[in-house]
Image 1 (cartoon, rainbow, N blue to C red):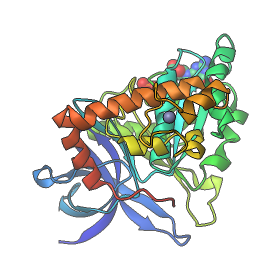
Image 2 (cartoon, rainbow, N blue to C red):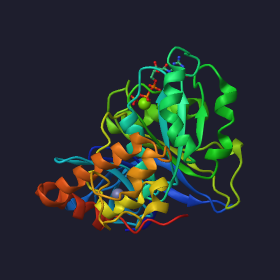
Image 3 (cartoon, rainbow, N blue to C red):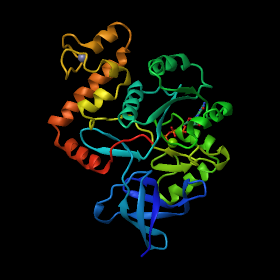
Image 4 (cartoon, rainbow, N blue to C red):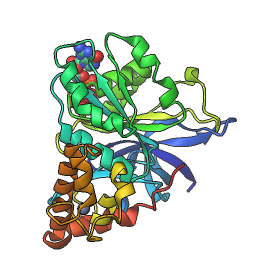
Length: 337
Ligand SMILES: Nc1nc2c(ncn2[C@@H]2O[C@H](COP(=O)(O)OP(=O)(O)OP(=O)(O)O)[C@@H](O)[C@H]2O)c(=O)[nH]1
Ligand SMILES: [Mg+2]
Ligand SMILES: [Zn+2]
């Protein structure tokens, strides 16, 4: 049987769809041809949207996974009981927030930590800026992140096309994944950017047998040819993901956390204790920086929360350690593209 390279383009639980990967004259690898149903023999291959795989056809529209290629990164969330993969091989996270319904500042903070831990980019999109009532409040929550260098764009997927078009340069050539709560407008942004997204979404839903209305699956959409390509000939893509409320990061170790807060980095090693949890230890450089208004108190609060979650994961709950081993065995060392 012929084996061929393919991209995992949609996942719904353990149901996967894939398309052949064809390299065009510009060096861009495009998912091409019909959606193939993918089976994973003996549960040995846990896939993520964005995975490059070696497949083998088993019938006219079904294939099985021979191998999943090593990943550049894998994004997932986990709490004490379960882990959920978001996507793999991504260049940046697009955190989608809205003026209403109110968004969770905690989820924003955690998405930033996840991006930093995977050494990938992150762009904050404040959507529904046509609704002004809570705009100032939303800006206040986002401001500390803008101050430490994360790009922020105010947009309206529905009522301000210029705000959407202005982001093409930030998306072109990159694989970006939406992260955000339900109702923030992730799918609306996707549909504003990618003309055939609605049709492809429909096709994914039919083939995966998911419901139609809210997003329940993760799905891959190549960016339009009309945008042009980056210097490597790549078009880039958007991955739409289902909204979620909690971004559990229980799998992160304390040392990973230490490096995932970019404004803490200059202070690494400056606390009296090398393993300082920045709680009530004497001579804590991070707490001093908060007192001097150099670090936002919300960021220290988030660090403390994640630090205590992480300890729980390391010492008390067996399930997390197992999940951690399972996923980290799948992931390769994060590296910049
Ligand atoms: N006023 C306004 N409404 C918007 C805008 N963008 C999206 N909406 C509305 O917000 C609602 C939710 O949008 P979706 O795009 O489905 O949100 P989502 O983030 O994909 O939600 P899930 O798939 O459930 O995670 C829809 O009713 C949209 O019409 C906007 O810019 N302005
Ligand atoms: Mg959606
Ligand atoms: Zn400290």
